[in-house]
Length: 153
Ligand SMILES: CC(C)(COP(=O)(O)OP(=O)(O)OC[C@H]1O[C@@H](n2cnc3c(N)ncnc32)[C@H](O)[C@@H]1OP(=O)(O)O)[C@@H](O)C(=O)NCCC(=O)NCCS
Image (cartoon, rainbow, N blue to C red; front, side, top):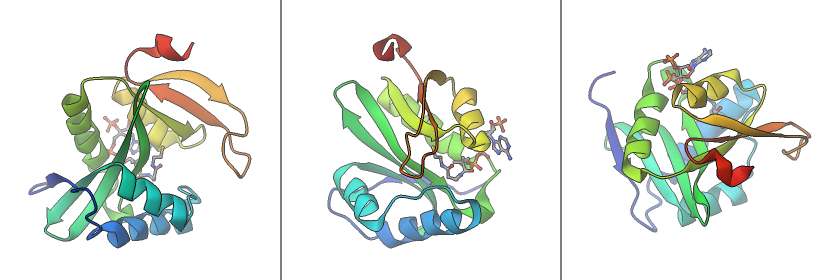
């Protein structure tokens, strides 16, 4: 897809917060994924590094939110607008983040979320652990990590 920009959000800038929330809600309504509450989402967006995929100034196509932790960089949220999925956008965004961070990146993913599991595998993430009832609704998760899987063993 041509003309796509990756932008990071300045601390305290909530210009695109609602766009990002709407992308998440659209996915929730269709696929029953991304069940985070508004309070959680707002806190994560405000307190961490947000990477936006944009076509123009305010047209957000997707985003990733990275939380810097003691044991590496935690991918808290990743979402691509429903009608833009399948065009290589998340791969572009994640490759950008991986090359910028150059350190361990890890995440949790529902084990039945095949697209996301495949995405992370294709980016070189390993499955470190399977966690039963990790999510509030009882769903199981994989802990997946890009580098340094020994940290979690
Ligand atoms: C998962 C998600 C981020 C993928 O974004 P995307 O832009 O559609 O993915 P891409 O087109 O960049 O494809 C990247 C990889 O994902 C996997 N993938 C994409 N579509 C897939 C499909 N329909 N079936 C299986 N794997 C798929 C493939 O491994 C693909 O790499 P490849 O094309 O080299 O094989 C997107 O579907 C999404 O927002 N899903 C809902 C929210 C979500 O699950 N977030 C992650 C939570 S952990």
